[in-house]
Image 1 (tube, rainbow, N blue to C red):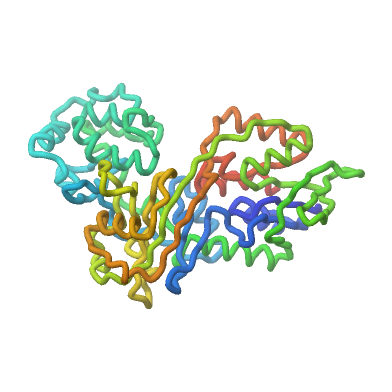
Image 2 (cartoon, rainbow, N blue to C red):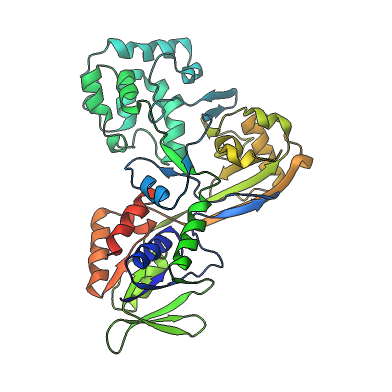
Length: 429
């Protein structure tokens, strides 16, 4: 049985600790924050505990559902459909793929003019070779359905979800579309085939995504693992007789046979540098949002479904998106008359309370009185991972392995719960 130190108490660190304990190792986990979870965080608003960070995982790949079942967590998909906001009104997002409608009856087409809908309908009459050589989402949709569908239906989703213009977003995000176009003969039919019926594209544990962190923390402790919170690791050095010496900010240190670095890139690479592995810290991005708990009764009718993406900017609105959390995840409504909204902002905007309430009112189409606001939290995420090149990732893994250290985490394996879960399997032998 080896002694393993895990640095970082987010999902990657907790899951690595859980798996290693299950294989008979002795594990101590260090987390610099006072609570575990990292970007899967919760917050209490008006007596409700809700997600303040990541709120769902992608079902694609199927590697998270088995973990949820193993941990005894019931999962479910979101309710309600999102809308796209325009100054003149809000329209449902297409129920197809990447904002592309799957039929001429999709309510999202109401955002188009009569002439633009006629262009989109022409898709059924085009040969399957039209758009077959496209390399980006925008190129394919424009060729088949017209530029208006790109601008009004697809762009709000790709810009809001992928932070990318459709003209630059590779079709690699939906690799089944072109083969389906070849077999079905039209893009709408291809979208219908790719989307298909069945499970939602995202899910969360009933009660909140944060429940995954709660249960993993419990399991680690039940299996004999030690979790030391508010305990940053400051130094990592080779041990006199092999292994490593891990030193914390309070001056304490422990000997360890193995070290798993599951901390953010800046921390992990700083510790690796102490072992002679030099690497440039990858770029990060920032995210900012305001959580509102309000008692405005009309919001109970879900005026914009699960939330809105922005179809365009407007001088009167500073926000870039809104999630109606209580409509999307209905267990947040149980036993309360409070509705929870998440208003997202560009990283350079620091909204006041009145601005956040005004933006929420504009995006929902519901006048929210300041007196209805019974809870508010302004949150910022300063170090959101940005995907690194596969070659860079492989080089880092090899360099770390060369000094006997293992790496995991969203910054390395890709930002998303599914990718982190897959990456942890690499270190849990």
